[in-house]
Amino acid sequence: MHKHRNAGGHTPKAAIRALVDRFHPKSGGGAPSCKVSGKVLSAVVVGGAIMAVGHPLVAGAAPVPAPAHVRAAHVNAADAAVQAPAAPLDQAAPAAPAAPAAAPAPAVPPAPEAPPAPEAPLAPAASPAPAAPPAPAAPRAPEVVPQAVSKSVPVDYQAQQTSYWCGPTATRIALSSITDKLPDQGSIATDLGTTENGTDHIGQVVDGLNRELEGTGIHYVTRDWGDRPLIPEMTQQLWSDTVRNIDAGKAMVANIVAKPGNQPPGYPSSETIYHYVAIVGYNAADKTVHISDPARFSGIEDYWLSLDQIASLIQPKGYAA
Image 1 (cartoon, helix red, strand yellow):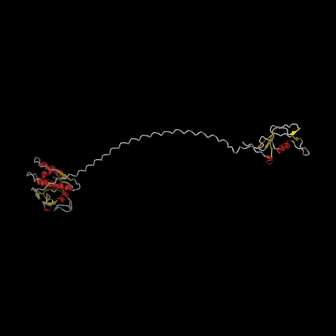
Image 2: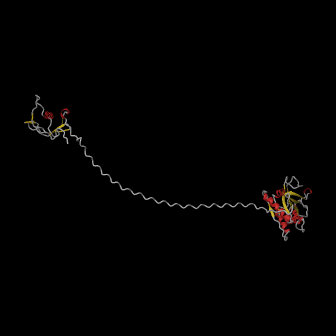
Image 3: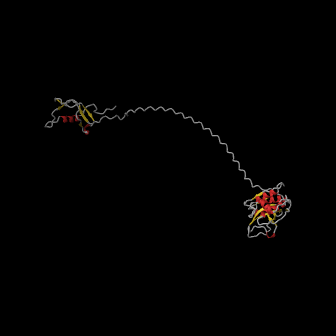
């Protein structure tokens, strides 16, 4: 270890002299009032200041009491400023021992993996909804094969006796194709419920025919078209009924509405005629029907009409088949 000079050794003379001069000033002539002993004054130099420790400074003089601590006398740095010892340069302060490395924390074992969720069972595929059944088609009348190209049944024709007995008279004409026992027009009108306004509905005619033919095994049915839109199935049904009944020897009765522009021959062209006629035959070659007309307009008792025209005349009402 290196020691700094004057640290605990001899005090420099110049410094001591300065200290003596401070505490024992010179006499009037400038000489000091006391002599300095040859002894060495013990002093401590701290930070450039000389601290007296209490030894006598002048030989032969009474000791001068000094305080335990004398104020520091500043020493000129040029004389001998003594620095406080510094830490040796070649010896570093011992390094603080390194803290022991922390023991590594035990590794946390990984959390066990959750087992995979079981797959949900697949829903069974929905079976396709059954297709809706097609709407039933309108019933078609069975196709009737005509027995001949043209056929008409024999009838006992009569013209109606009043303007409103067309229903009873057409009923009598139809009955004449089946039986010889024929009531008169008035009796039939009473049976049908005919009034001066005529016979209201084709059903009245059907009921009257069936009463007259009771016990014969022959029966009529009502085809009430009730002013429905005319479609081909209706026309085909009329044709089939006509062929089947005429081939069986049975005339039919039709309730018609003859408007201007769509009238049978001989009708008054400016009037709408509500009327009953008898269907007594057909012609398969040209699909026409044979009509026996009790009105005898223009003197015409019977005529032929196309299937389409008679169907259009019947469309607002109906017929007995």
